[in-house]
Image (tube, rainbow, N blue to C red; front, side, top):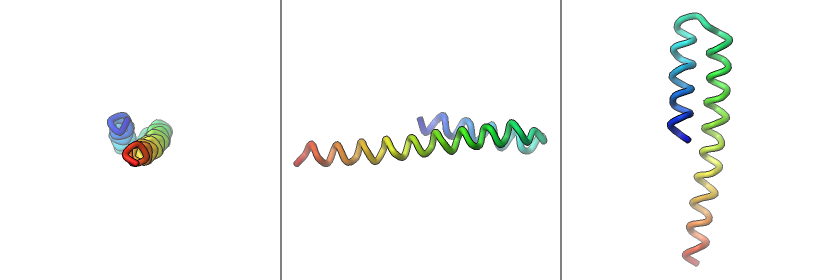
Amino acid sequence: MLRYALIFFIVAIIAGVLGFGGIAAGAASIAKIVFYIFLILLVFSLLSGLLKKV
């Protein structure tokens, strides 16, 4: 999932450099959403792993 966030981030940077503002904004917002989902799943996974050891 982090890979997809990085891909959308790179697409946003390239689109921004080439002057495609709408596409860059869309790709950046998708990258941000995917990254936050990744962080939530990471925290959930770490907490569930800690609870299984107890």
